[in-house]
Image 1 (cartoon, rainbow, N blue to C red):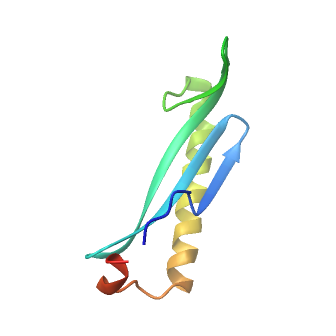
Image 2: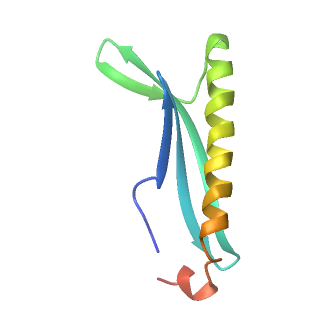
Length: 86
């Protein structure tokens, strides 16, 4: 199963954490990608670099991502290896 969009995103101001669901031969797993939006001369852009002032917000977003993933694991059966071939 291949998806082109995150299954969930958590955003606080310019800080965003995107959660991606993946199925491989080892089973179901999640990846988490943090980013920060900023306005440049060309318009809005994203970076994976954070300012010191962003760190408490990033920490909250990451903890919320962990909670969301744990909730999903409680409600989703483990993906089988056959799911990985789809």
